[in-house]
Image 1 (cartoon, rainbow, N blue to C red):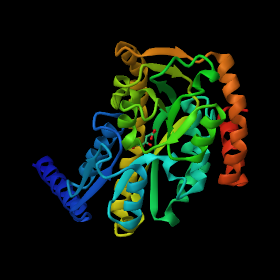
Image 2: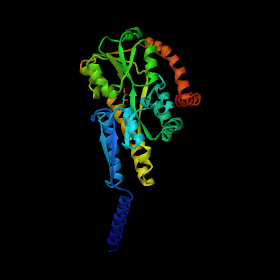
Image 3: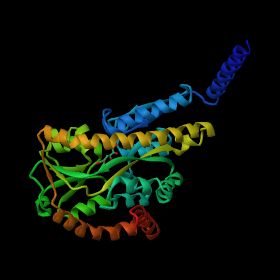
Image 4: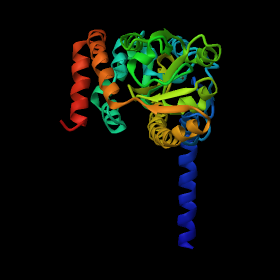
Length: 335
Ligand code: KDG
């Protein structure tokens, strides 16, 4: 009999806690925009985030993941968040440099040698410090996700040495580091939003682009690109951001739900992205792409030519940020 009473009490307590929990949250619809297709590492992580938020709020806070750049390009969504017309997005840190110049530090060629270093620096104090610079500009950075190490594709020829890039019209992200980097390598760099990239490749408005393997697969660039050259010339982060105007309307409990779900989505996204990347290269070969690895001697030439770009990055991000990031990389590398 006593056990029954105890169980009844436990059930009542849990129900009360559940009810209290649900009462902490107002019914809300959250528009979470992203640029890749739904069946991509971005799309899968947005859906995981949505599940976590809805679970934690008893279904009161609903996340509407909206992909394919349907809410606009990265820069258009950033403005929508700042204006309060959209609640959340994930996009490239590289497209944020017009709002927070320090974000350009993550575009430094060959900054990270591996994902272990990237995770340690991005999730450590200096990554947090750069992320925090978004808030005064009207966006709240929650977590970094992984876009991944970037590689070259083009429709003209295999790139076996830097000179092979000479007359290639190469689409780059709208960011001076990428423009300067590929000009230094001898390519004809053309800045375009990601949302316009497939059409530009299909119509030969540009000959090539550079992105991680996963994006070449999910965006079907293999349909309009013949050659893939493995360079791993830079590690690209994505960043999950929230409109500050909207963020300031939330209760502490609602903010904690979003922050906790963001951390879970980060860990899920990195694992998913890395697992998919190991399969993507084989898939691209299976789709008929001609794949080559840039020879180490040419990668060294690439590093030498791109070292000059670092001076410009240090100037645009500020010496303090430049030195702090490089010290964090050295520490993560165990030097
Ligand atoms: O939402 C897509 C963007 O994040 C885009 O920046 C991805 O790496 C990218 C690119 O090349 O534009």
